[in-house]
Image (tube, rainbow, N blue to C red):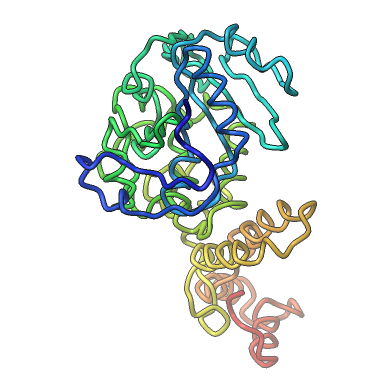
Length: 358
């Protein structure tokens, strides 16, 4: 029988030594999730909640996604259990079955191994194995906090890769360094996960990300775009992810944003500093406001906030630039016979009180 019921508190092994185990979680695990798990167990399988929902439950947040990894049953056996529910068959090639139970969207997946055969994010041959251990199934996941699994029969959290300690400490750490570097998209996943699920990135993991820099051209634009959407639409402080992009060097693949780093501004108008600093602050402010924006306009709002000043590097005029033009003009036309000159325009601008730098 499924022992986990709605409202039951989540427990973790005492041996974990993590304070996360002391969190009292009052959020309801939907009855629909328990019902799905009940069918799986009754058929001889084992149901584990995996992914972001486990992190959210442990941190007393309401999960938005419910992903169940099913051990002991193959894909066809799982599908046969839920013929009476609205179901989207993503396909046996992906090993994912999408259910809607009482309005709750639930993804069911079979444990798998990903064998890399190319350079892109999708260049993997997938091998499904319902007999895998929970530890081996979790090994392919990008970061340790994402390896946590909750046994839906007992309500216990299984921690095979140190995810609980990293969750408590707020550390984003690669699970298996060898497997991590096989998927370059994980660098951008770190960009959007760090401000959402952690506070700092493990130095060794940062080195892995830096080493994957040259792999960016092999990523599909659609997948890159999706990671940016998650950063700007869900992170409470997107600037943390942007700083990771800068520190890792991956910002060079986004030259319009990279140019903001060294674009100075008039301290009279922008005492905070460069256009980069200004844009990071605007992105954070937009994150605080986005829930008040109509959903159909929200994406344009957050992207517009980040990119509102991308034209500045190409159009900014500094005093040093003006001095250079003045010097050349005085050499070529020392008497000023050319009429309206940069000199006269500059003097007029200064007399009108317009800033020298915009």
